[in-house]
Length: 374
Image 1 (cartoon, one colour):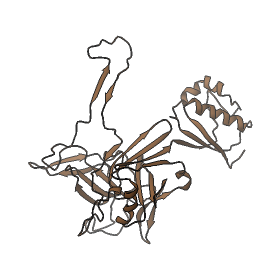
Image 2: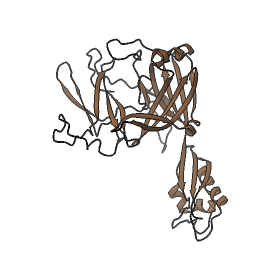
Image 3: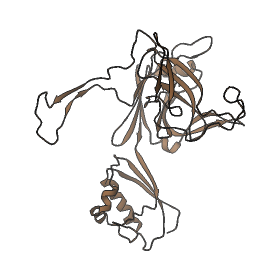
Image 4: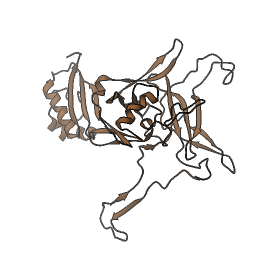
């Protein structure tokens, strides 16, 4: 894959904020842009290295600001910065990209990068209508760009992409856009590529020095990184998800790896529209995994006494305190068994939580017992 595009890109935070110097035609101005709202690394980074002459000749070296920034501009004169960050998951190098979305372009012909953002038209209620009700329903149309959407420059999938000779664009590697969407049951990743025809996919590996093609989208939630990908080898596609890992040398961790999880990858549903441009669609089902003894206990309702009636629970004040919307998620329960004053009937207990999950817009997919007392 020639590059990764973050679908939630507003840009990424490098230890709080990144200072971007834009050299304008008349007067240099300093803009401070927030590029991530949360951190992927919640600890110090590389603060125990030997003395580094440039940073701290007395040692120890502190590289917690990130390393190896590479700054360039795109076809619209917007700055983008590639740098080496770090994550708490494998605690290893992690490539990040910060893109300039607004403000002044470095090209005078472009001017400001901030676009109109689309339009909103209200058809009901009509202009001039008098509203005399406590609430009303608005209807109309809009062309706003989704927040979870990003475009990439065309014809930039060149191989080799650096060195004395720059290669030609490879259409099957030329990402055009990526977006995230969700419905009641799944999260959907959509990637558009310049050419996904059978001929283009078949020629791409040899043109780029590989034996297959991998299209991968990474997502950040809180301080965690998730990913989903489509791998095409010999004309056959498979869809993957998994964890992060690292390849380590004898002295340090060198590379982030994307490690497929055989079980979780089976739940990813994907398809490729073999056209030019073509679309890769990957659906990941929503799920909630709970590891608990599942024994509800409080002043208003307690299962420690053996009361497993969902009807009585729903009529109690406790129900409103824990009511939520599961948004159609599949729920997997792993029971930790506990001793109680009165034995709990397992079948009735599972039935209670199946009723609660259904009542809160979810589906109980599985319930398994773990080892424990009881």
